[in-house]
Amino acid sequence: MLFHWIFQTTGIELFDGRLFRAGIAALTSIILVLVLMPHYIRFLQKQDATSDFDKDQKTKSPPIMGGILLVFVVELVSLLICHLNGYTIATLSILFLFSAVGAWDDLAKVKTKRLIAQKKMTAKDYMEKADGISSGMRLVLYAIFSFVVAVFCYKFIPDLKGNLTVPFFPISVLQIELPNWLFVGFMTFVIAATANGTNFTDGLDSLVSVPIMTSMIFVGLVAYVSGNFIFSQYLHVPFLPGCDELFVIAMSIAGALLAYLWFNSPPAEIYMGDAGSVGFGATIGIMFILVQAGLFLPLVCIIIIVEAFSVVLQIGWFKATRLFTGTPRRLFLMAPLHHHYQKKWADQFSTKQMLNSKIVWRMHLISIFALIVSMVIFFGIR
Image 1 (cartoon, rainbow, N blue to C red):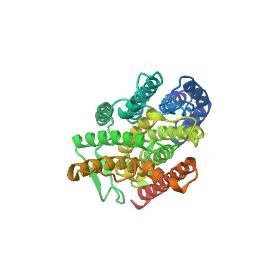
Image 2 (cartoon, rainbow, N blue to C red):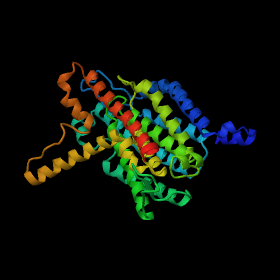
Image 3 (cartoon, one colour):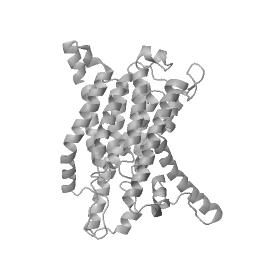
Image 4 (cartoon, helix red, strand yellow):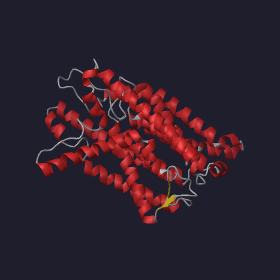
């Protein structure tokens, strides 16, 4: 809004340019996170805002809820720099609402940990109960928020249609057109599913940050091209007027996560927590749908998808084998998938830190490779 006012006041077209504003959004987010995060970490440490604890109470884990600051920075920067329309309002609303659910869950974990410290609850009770708020409550809130925003998108974004761009095919050859009711349902599912998947991925230092960043780079570039008539026609991408404002939000998120890596790189000084992973995960989901690239999400976000499916498969296989054979079995040593490799490769490394770094870096490289392949397919082969 600020840059829109400056443009209207001065008439300088630079302040209306998408590339310029996206770059400023990324730089501003980086600077704000780098400046504010050390103070925020000290504040959380004073509040003892951690969810984990050492049984002998001699060591403390890094504080959680780092995502609250990241979301605050992204919301602030986006509101100042991007133009408000149906695309940006829906995206920023999803980010705020899902981050609020995640923050509630983080606060519940901190409260539970304090009850253990006060001997009002045992560690065993903590491990047996739902982590934070109940999974059922989370899913209900996910479904409600996703559905409401999906309906808003369908009602108030004029050019939004239930179209899905199919990988490897130009839109003139093949494009899936969903009916209204199914499109709203599909959007609701994707938003909630990516929120859950990103939350599962946030299990090792910096593991979830790079997949979010690569997702934002892809969807931001698609939004920029889709909102430009000349570029969209040249690259055979659906023309979506106003969609390019999502490029500014995407670069703001990428910038904030890049600065966050300074503090979250192993060994982490702070964790993102559910406030960040759930909020940014849901944002990935809605942005891919809004740019009609929903079918590319499993390819771009392959790490997030695989992490989520590993949990689903583990639970499903465990219950199925218990039901049909009487002896429950597991597909993986532990789920999500990064925990499986922690156990599988444990004997190959002298320290746990080296093991975790190997897992994280390999998944980072897969995310970067998936980004390159996806861009080649979307802008070239398709």
